[in-house]
Image (tube, rainbow, N blue to C red):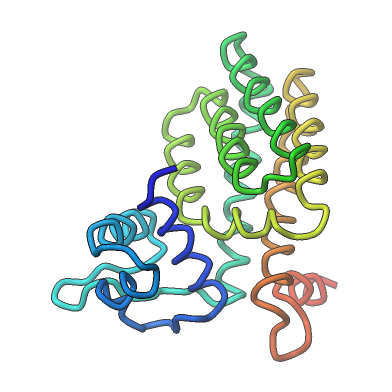
Length: 227
């Protein structure tokens, strides 16, 4: 893992923890002093964050913190769940041996990371697992949309894996998704992927962003409204 990538993750953690406020400028010199590094890897980290849409990089203002509200963030996870659901449905219909092998390899890597309790490595392998499903859909336009939103949500998907017992739960969900895709069960694959992604948004909003002023998380508020 490169120094810039480690710094990128550290800045993500600090932003999500509220150490930087929305609209605040991320000053390269201050960050370099904070992390005890030169400005070059800081600049690289900020460029990576900007490319993922995690921060705004504006002319003459530099890098600006951009944090979606809890409700907005849950809406993004909700959209991600729908997109991944479609990928799973198509993957179950169109699975090839090569795509199957790619999903299997990523799943096995996730098993090793989960067994070691390594959430950072698990996230990297988890990303490979999901991206293998996107490719297995054999719909390049849909896969592009999935890649883009996954990248936008990457920091939040990574952080929620630190929740208690989440690694093992996620691994079990992966096994169920893989089973459904291999069985060619389009609806089951879609449902399992949808639920797998949506619970990430719920766990994240509850764990990191806390409850909304009404005492409910965005997910709970939506469930109450639907009743």
